[in-house]
Length: 459
Image 1 (spheres, rainbow, N blue to C red):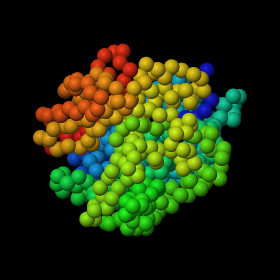
Image 2: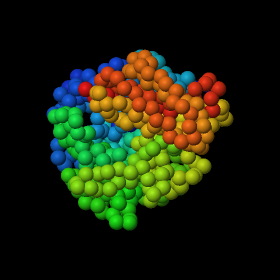
Image 3: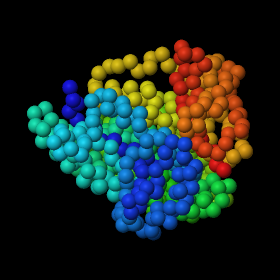
Image 4: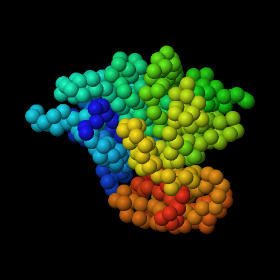
């Protein structure tokens, strides 16, 4: 039987292709991450936003085109993220279908929504209303069991911030059945703090200068700044608005904090929203959580008050849920994997299916041992790729580290010596390009849950 709800899919930052005057300017495809980045470098003049853009559109001819199907990465901007093809395939397997152009065909109940990830989440939430509400109306017009259909949002990363603003501040609560998020930074992420203050990694030449300008022009990046106190000040931690961040527009920093505090207040005032919110979070990965300012630059630390709490390698667990949800809450679904792979992780997709279908299913019960995997986002050609793996429960587990290129070809596979502590392996000779690193159990029956991350080797 066709599901009743209209499912709306919102990707994360960088997860939508962009076009300028009809020509794609951000649309990586398999095997072309480096080429896409160079193309983006040529297009930065088009993509950088004017000062004071706020919550509006710059009318610069740039518009979203579609969801990114495969790996998308920009050095110095958020984190490498794989595409949304497996997520969409799982939803289709549950009976959800997109609308088609044929006017005689029935309306669809699967609506992927691309958006311009440079812009304010408030702007994109307002825009979302103009897309979702007409689609829901068409779906309801079938009558019968569909007459009172509602919307379920399935969001990865920053897409969850847009959906939350739409629900709480744009009237979306009245038509929303469920909000399902994968790796959404409910309270921001320290990684964005480093990227805004420090800019792109040194060593990328003139590209780094241009990229820093783009990143600092994006309201969305300031709305990814941590809401929680995360910056060391003596023995205390202070918020971004209390620290005086070098190089940044203080009004945009304040606006980022206001974005989060407004959402938190609205959600606290609507208790019914809590039971409709389902957060799938990544755990056990070394994750930047706090920061210190040193000589005008940000240095990140994986600890919070000397305790390592982990996260999904991008979003720390302290920021991965609403303010009114404790980190140990049974409301959270925990998956040991990295941010850029959560929307493709089989266990996470099983959790998603269980939430959508409200029935029990097997959730990879054989994989009960988690891994903590440290993988750099970016290395330069000629540098060794260092992968550090720790078994979360301290047991000695045989593991395999597999490196594949963008075409899926295995370029390196090795099994470090089992250890009850950190296991490091250094991989050399990687040509410039984008690679996936998967750490899994050595045998088919291993109890180890696989973890996958991505690295860019820059020429």
